[in-house]
Length: 67
Image 1 (cartoon, rainbow, N blue to C red):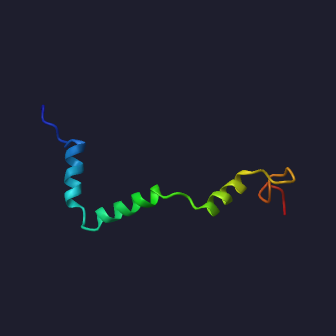
Image 2: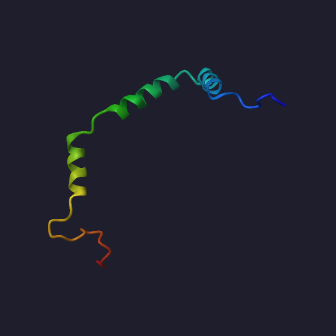
């Protein structure tokens, strides 16, 4: 009864890494590189504009009022 039916997390990850297709390591490296990339200035500016309230003090075009 003392036997453990489930392998440890380390054993699972080691087993799954050996079962990964050849391209999986390259895909993970690409994903990690994209995640670490700096946001482009144009995107940062767009986010800043979206965070700022509308100049007239209103909520903008999606304020819930009928068109």
